[in-house]
Length: 433
Image (cartoon, rainbow, N blue to C red; front, side, top):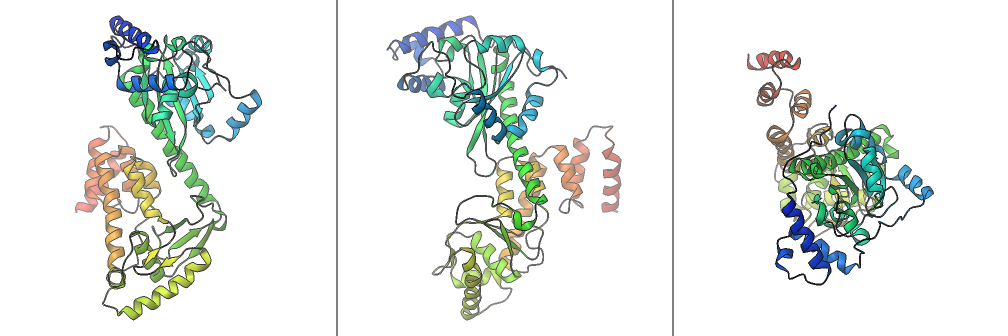
């Protein structure tokens, strides 16, 4: 495969580079009000200011924070260890040693764990300390894409003279943080360093997309691991003491996963708990009855059922409060997790996490409404935003199998000679007959 890094034209006009170099000199010598400093991008000026405040040297090598033994141990245990090959394939297809760029993966503290890429570029960047085990946080080396991306929590491009450290100014870089797909804490950073070709808009899109693909792969790996383990051995999705997950997708008997152990609920208790989980502000007795019961029930019936639910939840460490009825601890639902994945654009992962509708056997009005909202959100998001591969998976699943609109959209998106077209045409003819 060819390298995605082509040599652009006009990314760094000499006049622009010279202006930034002079602005940098004025800034570090105590003249931040110089008009040339005002022409520098705000994200860079703000980072220069933080670099000065942190007493970063303008000509110092990045400090090495990890011994070889510590580096090897961290590489074995870091959450990104299993996706390094994926990052390499996405950012340096073909001959890595002749790619023209260096790709680095660091931890959340900015310490570089893996540095790979073009042999000539690696040799040159190694001279400034761009090596595994080095600290490239903003506090250590000043303005540079890896550390600044971690500091801001978003993708960043730093062009040549915009670097705070003069030793780094011959290079340009684009970096993006990688988030834990469940807790949303930062796991690390992906960086591409090279010449002008790594600071184009297309380069930023590629690095950002790689970070999002890594997050999706991490979540898929966790989902596969949980599915392969016995129910009783499942680890909780989050370690918070009051946390629990209510699993309602594709099942009539809901399952409450608490501290790694699954507890099956009756349908009525599942309906009540789902309504409370999706209304964290609480519900009074009348509102809860309207959501759960198909016909009008007396307040006595609701109170009696809530008393039984409180007794069932007590041993699990989940408090059920009254006036209004609400949960004292955090209870997430697998349906809400799917909605969160859709919001983040993780379409493939969201679809893989959707085995079926919410409590399909429930007739409770509130459950039926929530069921339809989740199903509709999944369908509409995929039809509007998903790739053809994800749409094909959707039409192969329980929700999209008979979806004429989705099948027609797949036909429009597939190449004319795709082998999948004949099967889709046959399904459409059957559905429209």
